[in-house]
Length: 392
Image 1 (cartoon, rainbow, N blue to C red):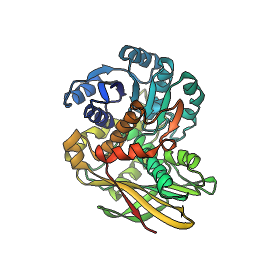
Image 2: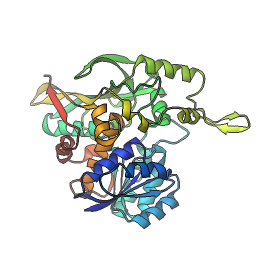
Image 3: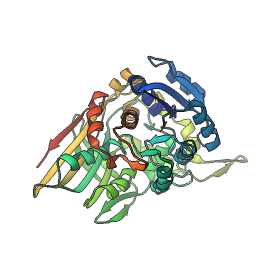
Image 4: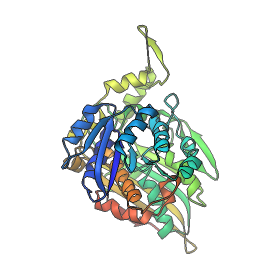
């Protein structure tokens, strides 16, 4: 029985709180904290058992330290913004508390996926005797664990990995993002990048695409992007020759995004407006629907998985493993849409792995470095069943 401090009360934070509340034998006490206390209170009032709520500005390490010392959690689950990874890791270091997140650090003034900032904490976390688990959402997270599962059970060597993320849902808005608009738009408008033959190859944003027939959804165009799990998988899957990440977008979404880019609304550098300095993308974020508000009317499904090629017993093997998640089903269970659900459930399971001792270590870890079996066992039990197909 353990106490957890969840930092972040958006769509993912709500899912994590709901799922932790479903497992009182592991999560005996739950504290939910955010900059906006009302968001925490709204989630608290949805839950089947009492939790504690608190207010904290996760941009400020001293404030985080004060909260952690007051709460005395066994684990901090960070599901706020990637900008805040380092301040929260610093607070965990100072207080000696384990840490878990779902996305790697990004500097506010640069759209850049890079684990180096967090990997640089390795020695400090190890010397402090605590554990940091990075990227325990779905992608990154479950997709990494799918690769570790495939390598452990189905391949002698993995040569190629294609991670494919399809959201075929309809939320009824002309334009909205499924998670924080600022992070989402920075990610989509960045240059693409993939790993091949030991080097990184860059592409123009959304310039490479192909069609894939997603189970339970059908054919969809998907676009090559860069995503942080490529970096850790290239380091942690021995012998891999190529890793790519693909995501689907509707033409309506891409048209809106193109117009916003053309008029400068996706810029992340400050501009002067009537004597005030504003960041256009942050202003746009204030105008768009809050992602946690999309769930009530969301219909359709997501399909996220990995196509993996390699060698088993000296023979070529192709293997596809994926999860399908229904937006409406997620809302009925936890008042959230499927994109938040597929991130929040793995965060809860990762926390469970750490708190029950199934995943333990001192230092900084990506999820594929740990035993995939106990995690894979819990995925279906807590709402994310997976399917695997052997193609050759």
